[in-house]
Image (cartoon, rainbow, N blue to C red; front, top):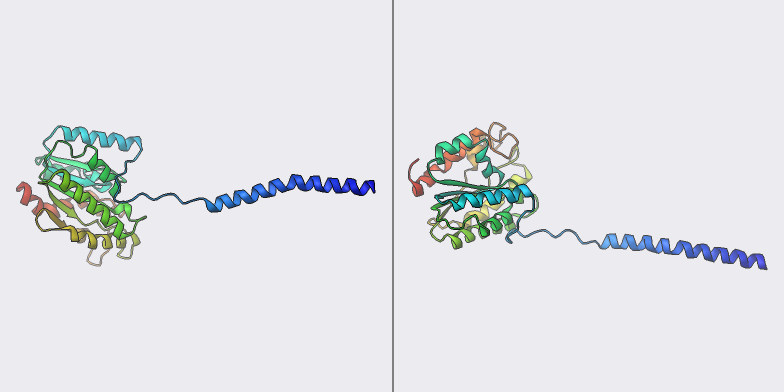
Length: 253
C-alpha cells in the first residue's frame, strides 16, 4: 500500500513537471500563429528611409537646391540617379547648360519621393519643368492602382508646392527580358492609370517605353544590362525621346 502511494506521488510529480512545458510549448505555438504580418507602408503616405547613405544623399540634394538655379528637375529612383553614372556624358550634352538637378535615389518608391518633396527637395526654388519617372520599385509589392495613386500624390505635391511648374510625367520604363515579365506587366497597368493624370497643359504624360524595346517587345542588355537600369545608349534614347517636350519649356538645347 505504501509502495502504491509512493509510485502515485512520483507520477503526479512527473506530470507536474511535464505539464508546464507542454502548456508553454502550446502557448508558444499559439503566439506564433497569432503573430501579425509586417505592416505595409502606403504608396501615398510620405515615408523616409533610415539608411545613412540615403539620408546623406537626400541632404546633398537639398544643399544643391539651396544654391538655386534649378530650372529642370529629374525626379525618381536609381534609374534617374543613373544620370550621374552611365548617363553622365548624355546629361552634360542635353542638360549641362539647363540648370538641371538630379533628384533620384536608388531604391526609392513613391512614398519615399513624397517625403523628400516635403522635406527640402523643393524648398526655395521655382523650377520650370519636372521630369518624373517613378514606381518600378513598388511593382513587386503593390497593385497598379496603389502605385498609380502614389504617382498621383507626387504630381499633386509638385503642383501644390510649385504652382507654376510644368510636369513631364513619364510612363514607368519596361523591365525584364520579355513582355511576359510579371513586373513589366504591373508597370504597364500602372502606366495606363497614370496616363489619366495628364491635362495636356501643366501635366503632360509621355510613355517612351518602346524606344528601349525591340520590335517583338523584348529588352536587350545593350539597352539595360541588368534588364532594369539603363546603359549609356539607353540614356541617350531617353534624352532624345523627351527632348521635344523639354524644348517646349526650356528652349532648344
